[in-house]
Image (cartoon, rainbow, N blue to C red; front, top):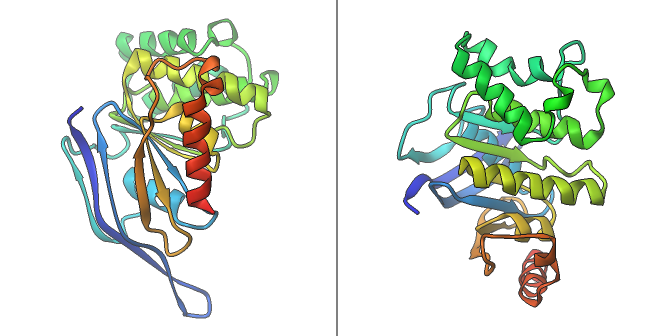
Length: 249
């Protein structure tokens, strides 16, 4: 896979309320290939979400460089999925998924068809006219993923999108995400606290240190890309997840 984007020597310093300086990220380097799923793991407060916001263009006050093979257009080429679905309660599922297209004033038949195709892809085509309060937590998160993909971004950024879900729903959404990736081949960067989630979903895992956040190591996941629930039972799955857990400790 060819290089898609590179994080080069990125550092981030905050000024606290007492005017002390807090270094959140220090000299971070990371390369992401086109069509790759990369997981970021590390202790709470190590700057994972901060780094994701920088990649999204939501935080531009940092040192270092983000280099792209195709420079993303603000608001058009980067999809973002948060831990909470943040769906608008007064809009139907279909109109929530269409929100990004509406913001871009895209009323084309191709855009409407992409929304319908995404609803089918995430298994919500029968709930297009439903409201968020009528959906389960997992269904709401699937709608949020479809919304982030509706305007066909170059890259999908996911900030602990499954952290608030129960284990069974989370595992099902893992498989949903892999199925979506298989269909779209989007580049994905995923922030997670779970070494099992990182192992199951990612092509490679970047391990970050405690604050100030640095990239301690980047590991290629030693599993075939075709993953199923049985993948979690493989010895190499347990070995790799255990190695990541040791690094975090």
